[in-house]
Amino acid sequence: MAQRNFRKIPVPTEKELIKFHLMYVRSETCWNVKSKVRYPGFRLSGKRYLSYRIMWFIHTGNDPGDKLVCHKCDNPLCLNPNHLFLGTNQDNVDDMLNKHRGSNQKLTAKDIPVIRSLGKTHLVGNIARMFNVHQSTISLILSGKRWGHIKENE
Image 1 (spheres, rainbow, N blue to C red):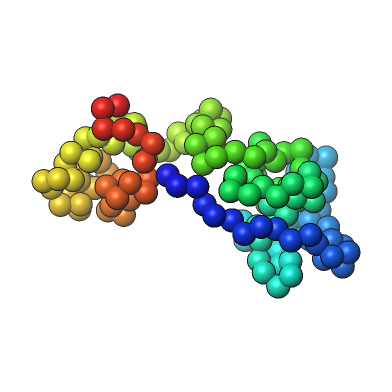
Image 2: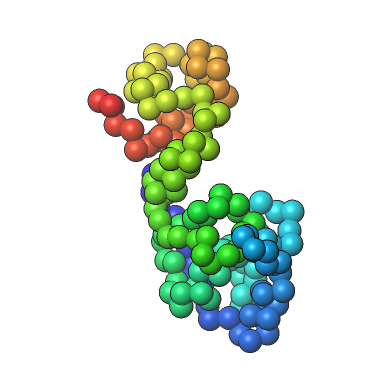
């Protein structure tokens, strides 16, 4: 899967910093954003950025660039800098699997080459029914947008 291209985070003004720090509540563990949005954002210089990317920048002084800012605590509302780490999409997936958060996953790495092979001769809807998943899941696999890290011979 291709890395995302994130915009460079601008240095926040003093007013923006104050407003940013008022958007979350600190507890002994997570610093949760006061939001119902799963991946909350914040505006800097009139543009929206993911709040945990801004926290990374504020805390470390380094723009995360094309890296993902991942959560050790698995809480997307958390801005505690001690719970954040930089990684690739694969690092994030590996972290999820190591914590067994992907246990409701219906497909395995062994299914992917079979699905790709079936995609050459079968309709997407039929393949989806075979694996008990949505048609969009099969389409994303066939286009390489999901499970792209799995090669044909695996």
